[in-house]
Length: 418
Image (cartoon, rainbow, N blue to C red; front, top):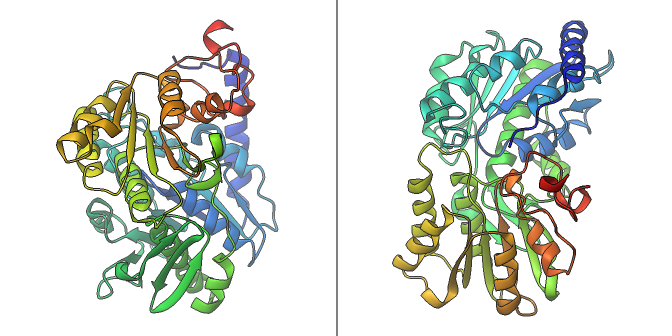
């Protein structure tokens, strides 16, 4: 099911793109663009909050597709805007070309590569994905800066494809300009502690992956320092980020249904983000209840069976008490989790959100910690709504809308019945 806007909306969009291209070309704001398979939105969020403390900053909307997002954002930029941050998602060939027709970044950030959008309906392969995202660093000017994740081999290899300066971030102190000691990472429901460039840093963001989002932001500040001859110390940076809260649905801690605690990570699911989320849940010290993982399918993968099996094998080695796997490919997760050592009586495969809710009603106890993970358009956030007794009439497996179910006009009667 794919939403197609009517002809007059398409005409309006094309006109807006032309206007945005011309408008942006005259604006003096420093343009920063970022892409990757995971970590983009959190990095955009943190970077924008930090840059706002330095000067007027405009960023792309977190809930809009790049196709529409870039021109809308460009037209918000004014002559006194100091920084313009563009999050560029790509899922088809030439998507990056379309974005770069308007955006002319001086700084580019590549967060990481995972095999998402690699199915035949989208980019078709991991190599095509890499090629498309790599166009961002290829487009940088010679006096620009590429901020690259050294720990990701596919990102590391992009350094040879840019004429810009490279700033590395990662966990190898000898290779990276910005680094974190992985042994220093401590996770709790209050946030994450770690050592950044030998200095202790505390954030209210939960998850091992946030060491990378924070490093990417700090590395970007170093690039800005080179361009603007300004300096932000590690102490100043630590103060800037210590109160930033997680985005809803991206490892956000919420009051759960049936007197539980909900770790809501329901807006994206690819192999890398799912692995990171599950490892975070496993390593969290939590003694008030059990840990229950609810997983929806990871979409748009070149080898979905293989990638889901890898997640199942991982779960069997983790400190997770119950697993609810939902959807055809999640059956492989459930099977592999049992094979890898998880108690078969604690693993359940269900076909949809309704069966998942029914199963959870029998399992959940007060103070259990629920980890909810799934791809955006599968809208697994319907499960907590069902457990709260809310009416859900929409049973589509793959929804065409990006907005969330609690505020959806089709929630009660269903989009399929419109």
